[in-house]
Image (cartoon, rainbow, N blue to C red; front, side, top):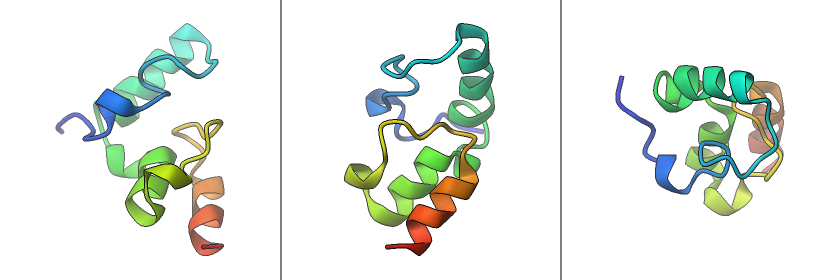
Length: 72
């Protein structure tokens, strides 16, 4: 699996969000450098655009991402 196309500007990947280091590393491995289509941030980005991605949305918050997408 290729790296996510959003890595360069992703505030989560670039440690601009508060996260526990070990947990953040797991998310990065699983979502950013793994199955990025399952990343909540990527889901919102693809459906609504970069500006619609909430600053506090973590990669594992798919339910919230689906709610944002459905509410658009």
